[in-house]
Image (cartoon, rainbow, N blue to C red; front, top):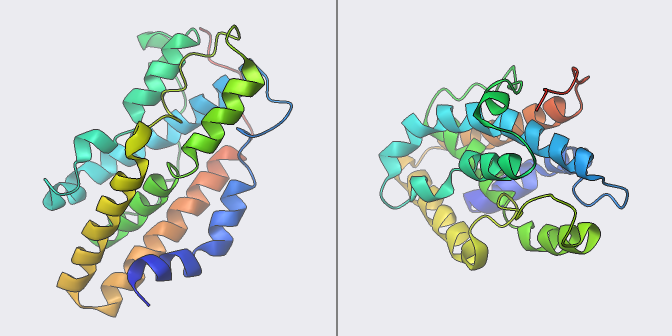
Length: 202
């Protein structure tokens, strides 16, 4: 079993639990609900991407890190929904975060974040139908991530992941990748289901 297949198999229950707490496909989603989901995503992606930047930089240029960061896309959406730099800076940030102690754990975390783009086109179609053109919810920059490059970007990530696993040639490395992914899914689910504070004033 290659590492991608192992990740899919050994994180399935964590993945399913996380999917179960997301509301982007909710038939009753309001613009305010959608903004809150984006605020929550920002609170998780911002610190996670900051942690990932160091260890994943060793895999450049193959990984194309600058093209993979989602925080700028989330901030574009949030600005379109009334936020400014000040209110974005005041948004809560997720804690605790998964312990990304090395490259293996960082790759596991990146597997979760990259995998989240695969359903983007389905979510985009739903949101466009659900809200219509006049709902004031922006251009869906976050769910449009990569556009028509979703498949190539996912395959490129898979190739980098596989090469890193082959270079390490260690089950300990692969197990750490899997644990990093599990911890990221669990942190995501815990953050999205926490008791929310009062909304940040726009």
